[in-house]
Length: 437
Image (cartoon, rainbow, N blue to C red; front, side, top):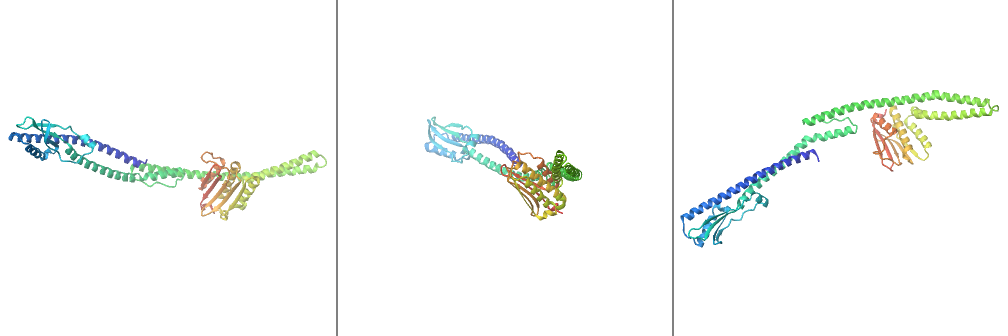
């Protein structure tokens, strides 16, 4: 439940509590009013009836008694009374209240008063008497109409206030959505955006802090990316230097050993068979070692990448990979536009493909891998395999995947990794035209 709705509900509950207290006050006043009104009507009618009987102390006939009762019933104040004449417990004449609108039972129960009887004897007739019984129904109905109108007005006021409050809170809390979006962008590692200034003091402080945090993280990320690119460049320089030293130093030493072994084998031919055989074995070992050294130099710094560019270098690497992994076939397609990538992008894309194929060989158990360099307004490197896949949420990233992420972050490329257990994996890297020369 949003803060906006919670605040509206809290205000509504407080307002309803105020309405309940106000209703209690109204009920208390209504009860007092009913008691006073009914008691006043009964007292007035009794006094008027006493005065009439004292002035006309004669015996009333039945018709006269009925006329007296009806006359009293027509008095305005007597509308809260029921009048009757009883003789020896038998009602001889009566005047009932006209029907009135009934209040709800719960309101009637709250403000009801106990009925009271007032008895006046008729002159000249000891067995007859006039009985006045209070009936507060009409007064309760009037009080209910007033209370109902008051409750209706309060309900309308509550709805209007809730609507205004909901609208005002929406205006005040609108920047919260922008703040949340800003935090989401920070969580995704995007620090280029800022939240627009707001007028609400509390949110203004949060926005300022968030924008400052974003700026600090943006600067830190830029510095980290610069350092990462520098480290990767230094790593490639070290690889290039190591490959050159292997070629110049170790390669020459291996060639010299091989030449010496060949000379020994030639000199000992027919003289010392064991020495000749040992020399031939040394020659074979140096040949194998030379092949290994050349392979190491190719992994450290592919010469074909420097001489022919990215696409031929990848083709050579993938052809060699297919030879080394006969159970898995790797296809390769490339848009010619990738031939114009600058040197930095070429070496990084080469290393990414190298790491990805190493991971496929170690973990995927795939039968087919597709490597594609696509140019569709953006530059994309897509590597798709049909292997066993994995769950990215449960599998920890190894050195290969971490290296790929570092290279993508340093170059500002977007990395997409999709994988499901048993459904293979997709690795896609997207970067803008800035990677081209």
